[in-house]
Length: 428
Image (tube, rainbow, N blue to C red):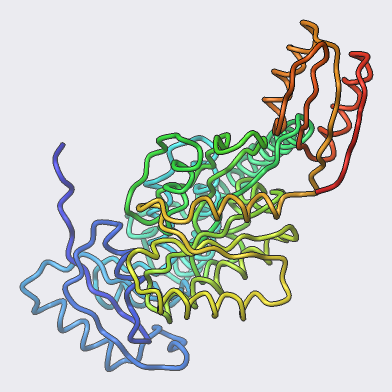
């Protein structure tokens, strides 16, 4: 397959840390040939950066040996600022949100994700189209998002209709997803969601814990659609779901567009928050804060297991420092923590122990049943929906089972119908 040729672009930022925006640009196949930084507390109202820096960039574009096709702003542009810059530099101008949406669009491989991305795109474009309408009525003849001439009034009305239709479709999907979660809970499954900053190793962890092979790519937002698999590490029935990765400074309307997907996190019995421990300490701090803020904004109230992944890439001292930060930052919250390496399969057993300890209340039930074919059918059901701790065959069948509240009640009901006895029961 022929490789996409990278287009030359430049970055413009108000601060020195441009690692994330550079990664976003490279994920969109842009080759960054230069970076311009203007230290400011706030963007310029008219053109985001001051006139001097604006002129400097214009001169660079005109004289560069590279064919500069895009200028990328590490921030959020107002429509009026975008219009001024595109007209001044005569090249395509993208801001940070536009880059993120372009990556989303490229990664969306399922219908729900495609609908969510399109809704986010329309939300993003609305104020720009309003600006174009204003400019057109003022006698100017702008194009739409660097795409040529448009009847912007008609396009704006089309956008409103399309947004309404997409919201209705996503609401239908959300209701179906809610019913599936309810059915899974009612069937006795614990629901666990994997969350965390994009590219932290969530999909790799899902593969290891479920003995599956979900595609894992070293790129931003490789997971936009949810993937649910059964945990195969014990007889405790757990369904684990991988979800879209977090990223800092996302506006509420983008998060809202992915509402039906992110509900998987909110409704989980336990959230496993995966963070990349190999990041520098400042980046690690920022990502933990961003992720915990996102969980709070989603309304997560159930326990969170913070998993520091990729610890094989750093020293024990660095692991200790990062664990101390997480402990201090999460103090007062319902959480636990474990440091692992998915790649090296380090401490996964400890992760599972901590996960089990955070699940809703478990019960251990000792029962006795007649040794019949019906009991063997019941035994198959026990293997599917609970954990069989011990079984002894005599003229009777004695079992010790670990299960949660709903399954415990079903076990008792089935024991009665099979003419057996509950010998002992205790909370764990």
